[in-house]
Each structure stands twice: as C-alpha cells, then as structure tokens.
Image 1: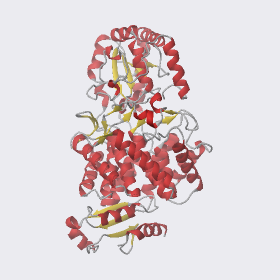
Image 2 (image 1 turned 90 degrees about the horizontal axis):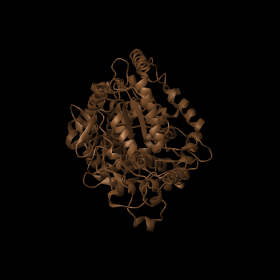
Image 3 (image 1 turned 30 degrees about the vertical axis):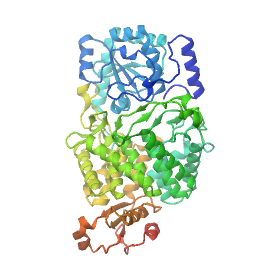
Image 4 (image 1 turned 45 degrees about the vertical axis):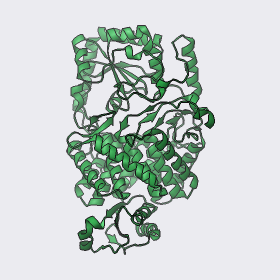
Length: 629
C-alpha cells in the first residue's frame, strides 16, 4: 500500500522532502491538471516533473532483448494514474538529474501502469504503489524496494547496491533463477475437492474474526471497503436472517457513509481509510469500488427498508454520472486522482477550484462492474436513468472492445489494448446477464452466450478445472511463461456460468462452473476473507435454482415493472427469462405459458412450478414463500 498510515503522515513526508530540497512543486492549480492525456502510453504526475527524461520503454520483448544484448538489469516501475506516491516519485526522485542519468546508462527502464497492466502488477508488485522491481533479462526478480517511496539519495543507494549485486553475483543469480524455474515447472495444482455447504459458514467465520465491532469494516488500518465481502454478507442475509451478518453489514455501511471515506460534496467514496474509524481517507476514487458500492447500498436499502442507504446509492450515481462518465463515449473513466487540499474545501469553495484530474481510460472490467451496480440500482430503486447509462456503457465496451477472435480488450484509449484477460471477461459476462434480466433485450443474452463460449474455449484449464488469467502464455514478452488461476476471478466466472446455465438450460456452463469451484475447494481457506467471492459462487451452485420467466414486450413499462418486482424478492439468487411475444410467440404457445396482452410471470423453484402471476405487487412474496417451502 502507499506509505503513510494517516493523512498526517503524508503531510509530514511532503514537508520532509521539501525541507531536503527535493524540488517539490508548489501545490497549486494549473490547466494541465484537468485530465491525463490518454494518448501518452505513460502516466506521469500532473504536476511539474522531469520523469519523462528517463528512457522508459513499454513492457515487451524489445526491452528484454536490449537487456540481454547489453547485459543490463531491467528496472520495472509500476505506477498508477491515481497514485499519490507515484506522483511524488515522479516529482522528486525521478526528476533528480543523477537518478535520471544512472537509470538511463546502467538499466533498461520499463514503466507500466497498474490499471492498464494488471497481469504485470499481479506478478511483480511486491510493495504497493509505486512498485520498483529489478529483473533479469529472463524476467525473474533479483531485487526491489519494500518501501514504495524513496527520496533521491536513498534511491541512488538502492540502485548502486543492486548494480553491485547484479554485476558481481551472476553465478548466484543464475543458480537462483534456475531453481525458481525448476520449482515452477514441477509445481502441481492442488487436488480438486467437492465444494459444500460448509464453505459459506467457514467464510462467514473468517470474516467475523477480523470484523471491527466498534467501527465496522474488516481489519484495523489501513481499512478498505471490500465490496466483495459486503456483497457476500448481503447474500447471506437474503438467505435467512443472521444477526452477526446483519451487524457486520449495517455497522460497516453506516460507518463508511458517516466518516471521511464518503465525499458529501462531489459524491462517491474514496479508495480507503488510513485510520480505523474511517475518518482520514486516501483521496483517490476508483470506478470499480464506487460501481460495486452503488449496488451494495441499493441492496442494503431493500434488505433493511432504510432510506438512508438508498440515498447513498443515488449519490454514488450522481458522482459516476457527473464526474467519471465521459459524454462522448458513454463509458466511465477508470479513476480520479487524490488531492487532499481540494477535498478539504467546503462545497462553495470547492466549486471554484479545478477538480483533481481524471484517468479517462476506459477499462472493460471496472466499466462492467459499474454497469452491474447501476442495473442493480435500477432494479431496486426504479431509476430509469441508471438502466439507460448502464446499457450505454455496456454497448460501448461490446462494440469497441470485443473481438470474436482475440476476445475482450482490457482497456481503450482511442483504440483497444490487451485482449484476453479473465478479469474482464468474468465481469462483462454477468453484467450482460444483468442487462438482459433488466429488460435490455435478447441481444444481451446472446452476448452472454458468446462470452461464455469464448471463456471456456480460451481460458479453461480442461485438465484440472478453473480458468487461467490470460489467454496466451506470456513468456514471449519477458515474464515467466506461467498462466495463473486467481480464485476471485474464477469465482466470479463460475457464479456467472451457473446463472447462465440456469437461464438457458445449457449444462456445459454449469459443469464448467462446478469444475472451477472444485479446483479451489481445498485451498479457499488460505485466502481468508478474500474467499468471499468463492463462498458466494458455491452458494449459487448449491442453491436450488429459482427461475422466473416473464412474458411481455420488454420495452413496455408494465413488463419492466414485473421485471423489477422479480428482482425485489428477498432471496439470494434468481435467474430471469424475458420472453418477448414478438420473438417468442411460438415458444410461449408450445410451453403453455401464453401472453394475453398483459405481462405474466411464471415461477419455477427447483423442479416445482407455480401458478402464473399477473400482479407485480405479489410476485416478491410468491418467490420468497416458494423458496422457503
């Protein structure tokens, strides 16, 4: 994580650096801070700096070929557009003439953005952001810094020590690299198991063990919102009242909304709190977090009946639509930079000052998460603008970032880049299902099927179960040719595939979901509370399927009202089929469902089907009662 456990620590480091003469820029507004230029392959601090004088290269074979040719180590710097200490590094250390010269002459400098290259961040980030790693020409780590920010003098010492080790310990380095590669080649995946009902209770226990009873949240400090844990608690509560889960959810949501994490002026939540009581945030804002929290607060309002949660959900929507939404593309930018002084201002004073810059890069996965949150907000709160914005976002991602051969691109900055990552596909698949189940039209179900087939054909480990994190083994670009199987993304994918199988009746998807979850049955406890997504996916797999088929034109408000009613039932899972009479007239006739000019809902729970429902007001109760029987 970024250094500094509180805002006062950030301020102290700034003052120390300035006192030492590290050429700290004045904290003032300037026009070039409005937003980052996404045409530039590298993000540098928006404040004055000389970091671009370092001969940065993008990650790729060319950099590693140069390292082999010149017998130099690769210096990999992983930063982020929203990262305060990355900007500090640019403005001070990477602007120091001696550091610039030393790096350019003795290293092959490679720079990567954490958001644009999550595959590199997963493999090489050892200390938070910024992350500095020194690599062999084969892509193996030989050194780095356990402290994210180092001022120039300390950084020069680090460079000198690394060069001394690299140039005088080649035999030791080669032996260590050889041992690592041999161990990697001989590694075997854990034996698959059978996910069962104990997964949810065990995960809930692990969450309870680190729950902060006084201030809410999980752990002490630094304190993150952990949307995946909150979502799991909502699923647990919808499955039957549990006092502990209710306490953890409500205490956390109340504390977050009442503390410094929540921006009451511009809306939205900051990335994390540096203090246990949520009072002092780190001021960057992330699209994915806010998109997920919108859906969580909407769900909490449904579960508890508390209007205050609905108000927070609507305010997050305000932030997304007025700040992160790009009206030219209809998609969301990935993040907003931190600026402690800006966020300390009152509403009137803040309105007169230029807001912190945005990263306008469109990231597929976070945009899908935001779209899913907006659609859940629409389903619960009935705000049609949320649905409209979500469909526009998904349309952009599908039309500009999907390729039938290469797959889904990770980011778009005028053109798509980095296709084939599991982290994006696993998020877009359920978001497309959400769009279909919100009356968005048959096309979204077709797109869900396309994504699911691509996922199985390109990312599934057919021998051991589960899904790899990228479509192509990355070894040709320098880093170890080992594809990984992350439990979180596997769990999200498995939950979506289970849901798709229940919607379409195509068992191939459900079988792949079961194989993926079985692959982690013996190791999920090792991830602790981060296994929340896994527990939720197992719950969905084992739960008796609840299927609601709604016949009616999806563009008509009466049909949408029936759809929203199905979504408002207090049950953990459901799959909703929307049968447009104009497209499915023959199917309706063959199945006996029929359509007589007004929307009708047909409920099947497990193998038992109920009488049709024509009154949206009674549909939630029918679903809840039917599942309890």
